[in-house]
Image 1 (tube, one colour):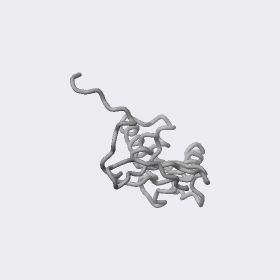
Image 2 (cartoon, helix red, strand yellow; image 1 turned 90 degrees about the vertical axis):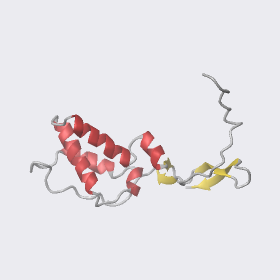
Image 3 (cartoon, helix red, strand yellow; image 1 turned 180 degrees about the vertical axis):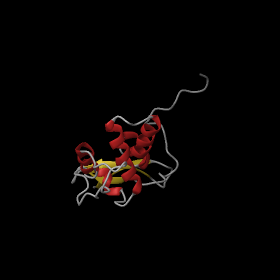
Image 4 (cartoon, rainbow, N blue to C red; image 1 turned 135 degrees about the vertical axis):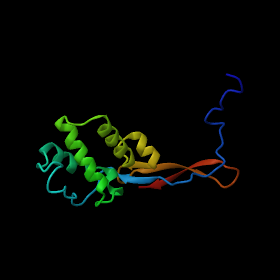
Length: 144
């Protein structure tokens, strides 16, 4: 490749401030009642124990603190999971599952994209802050 080698991290300067701030999520997860699944799974059968347990676990995650409890997309997510575990899913169902996971911060990459960070209570979080003077970075302590 032509051109100069990339600068080392210590030589780089960021000239623009971050567009979005990080959202700090509590590591202990969401506290509160779990939204109820619809009475029946798609097709009219009862929800499997596997899906009911998965649903309870899903709503105890730190990311669930940012979700709307009435979101129909999460009910569709449960229906897709039920279909997956029964062995009836196809490629488009799996793609829909991955898309919903990404929109709800359920992968490391989507956590980064949503600018969500999971932190323990009482942890001191060091976040880079751009100085208004000449775009210099400095580290400041922030509490969760």
